Length: 529
Image (cartoon, rainbow, N blue to C red):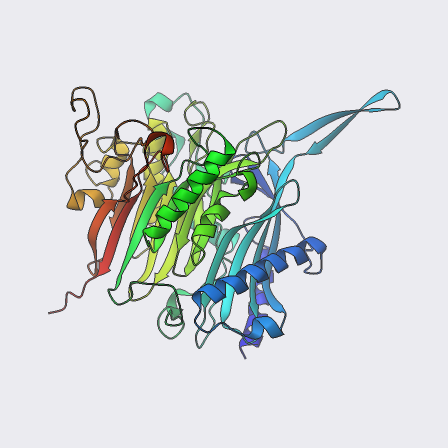
């Protein structure tokens, strides 16, 4: 019966894939246009390799977290529920393909050849096994030298019924439009009136990458989902969870040599794992063909190696252009011990005439996570621009985006702004932007702590201890300012228990990152009389 349901679900998937947001050529993220590949067959050699990688990873993952893994992995072939292949084209103007011009000498005569520059291919695959209740989704990316890397892996286990939810282009556009409504060029500050502000609605920049297979809202609960079979250490008896935000400083190291990065990421991985956080939002996560040494170019895999029992989604925000077509991308990632039942993202608007905003596209990544005894929680992660004007636009767009999702919500990341800045004042509900106010959104740090004084001239004497709560810059002798935050929109049954900085003894040239990580514990509270 379950297998027949899966077959019907697959037919629905095929019909909906025609309307997928990756159809034709769309801007996926900064510098990249997506081209949907039709007529994908699971017997194609590249697809067979992708399926093998996904199957092996899924089997290994289940052995880590499931107390009684399905034995069907050994006796049957995987069932492919959905398959999507997308070519990643370079673009320098967010609209047209970048064309690579090559000159060759043939029989003493110069021959000019032009071709579109493709920096990689993404494969999205959903799989299970016949008679199995375990479901996996992967996004696997191929680089220009045909190496494959796992960028996303989510997993859940169905109970007595299977629920599927498919999101078409039109549904995604509706969410996008709600998130960016009222954000026209005329809304921007007067200082940007001469610039070219690209809003998500203008550039199709807020494409939402919905999971083609995820749990329906009405199917959540003990009947359709349970974590009682998990081996992962959890806080179920306390009905609480810990969330962590960390800017990992991409591939940098003070010594600027690959071997020092290897040491640093191992140090960082151990530190994060030791925090026993249930959900982690990472910023400055890179894919860089020129970095990583023997670990490889995909930082999300370096993190996953240290967090093997976590599901994760990684989304690039920008691909940096280079003439030699080296693939260098930076973005965000969310790791979770619990099922990521849905995820998507928006591209934030960008002013291409603003030097601090034009090069680096910014995004907001969202994951809906099903936490035992808590329910579904929306986690938003972002890393805002160095441009003050862009940050002010972005927080408005993010708030609109958050308002498209009901229920508990957590916004975290590196905001590149201090507490007195307008973006943080807006998110904290202290000021409005064009008549719009946030509601019930709280700066977690300020619930338990006073505002730390920034390390400005005349505030501290010499090596006087800096106030607790500053988060940047660990490469200096002292921390200077607070720019990393966790914002909470919680219902009455959830309460912040504590918020702190993740203790790290390494500083300056041995620093694990240039940022401190911020962590918070949230608990379910019974307020019944």
